[in-house]
Image (cartoon, rainbow, N blue to C red; front, side, top):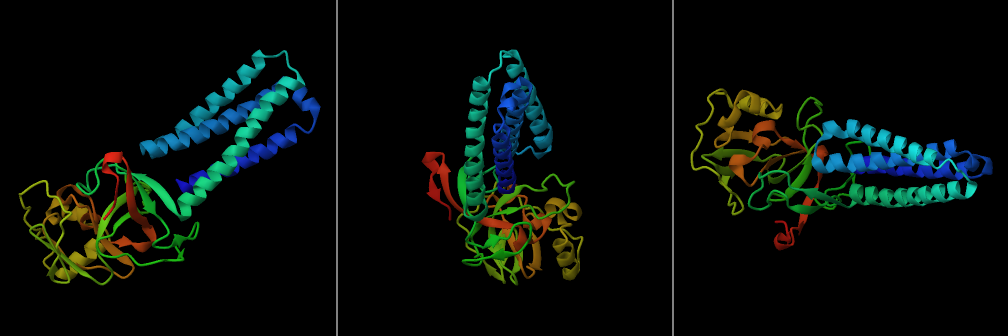
Length: 315
């Protein structure tokens, strides 16, 4: 989202530059068709901004380009028609119209650029989309994510800089779903889970109970929707094969729900984490799609700010 906002701000700045070039010659202001076209571009840009924000909020990425194109085209047509109906054109009317567009473009450039900078480097708002973190976080909770605590990702790379601290067991983290397969329904989406194991840790689940390095973990935050325990899978009699299939993210396809309540043991690879939802029976997490690479990590969940009655520091 923050990268999208950055490019929108650049578009606003480019449009503001274009408007300043346009008003340098009064002859352009006298031509209602040129003024209408410039105003139409303003509506197209407004459509792009509105469409981008709407589809991001609704989490319907497949609608991004159709909606943006539709709103932009409708805005352009509306701008041209409205200006064409006022064909009693004058430089004064045109300048007033263009000046308003210029003010909005300048505001959009500075405000959206600042927002993208803050969201990329410092704090980002996030909305809980599902019940996988109940009862720590509920569906619809709005929270802030601390993005600089685990380091700031250098744009268009997987490298990070200025890391304040490493991920700790128990941290609630936000990350981009670990896949580069654009056919996946989860591609590009942000997830939120709890880091229960770190690089080098051995993880095992026995009858819903989590063990890390052979020791049972006390987890007061967990929630189980069912008392029923799914029997363990017998597909991988060799521990090494279980580890291999888990690391490549094949567990959901090969073992399905059988790894929900009985899992492992596996060793978390270097540079990766084992993450799980607090609502263990209703969470699609590392048990199914494998270890989480550090490069997909976006930040640590910080505070819930909406609804007010649930405002709290996330632990």
